[in-house]
Length: 292
Image 1: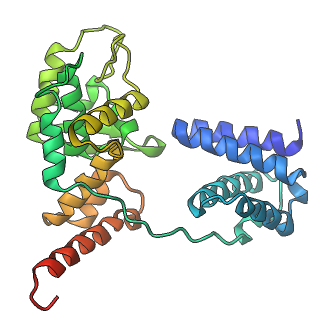
Image 2: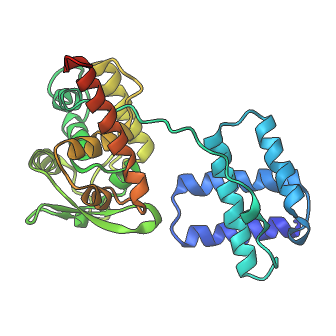
Image 3: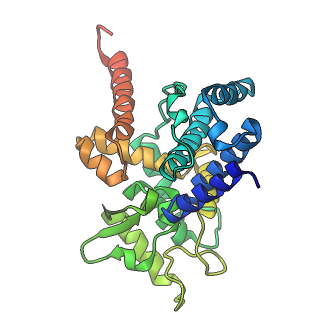
């Protein structure tokens, strides 16, 4: 194995220890392995020219700006690690300009659309093996704004039934407290009342084998109901997180409070929802104002 390959393995081991999400770890590992093959050089020999040639190669593959930004972030993380370990003397990756990503606002369900979908889950056809569990999934996604990975990782001790809180482990294993609203709490109680009792299984959501329901399993469940009820297969678990934030903001919630509820490290990440609200506001204005 080359020296660069060894440093990539050491760096990825550190990312795993720090609690990086499985999705991020897999993506970064692939990105860095591709980087190693393209630059084909030892760490100290990777100068700005080589990095720009690697970046030009990414553009030639017609990759999106978002994908290139992710790959560049993976490489910068590797260079920070090698600089800290004394493998390189200069972090050349800092000199590479980050491509601008298009400002695309997420598609947001209206409150009526979200509530109609959630209320229909488990309330009518089709016949499903675990309708009560499925309803709890939708209520928790929309009522608590959880990431799908956070919902899949939820354990029984994370539920504070008396105070109405959930302990959520977000990105980087950062914990936060999220209020458990009445409808979500009621749906969760109905599910827990019929959830099989397994001494060594602490996962809240179980699959048909009484193991932990995975994020992939939750995505499949959401897609099924969204396609069947709303005729919209593009709806996914994160759609409810977007709706949660946007509807809170529209009803007067403070942006900082929403940041805490979502577990965003930066306020700028949360601020995109203000843009969504402004777009909705302008649509109402254009439709209703006589001078529009």
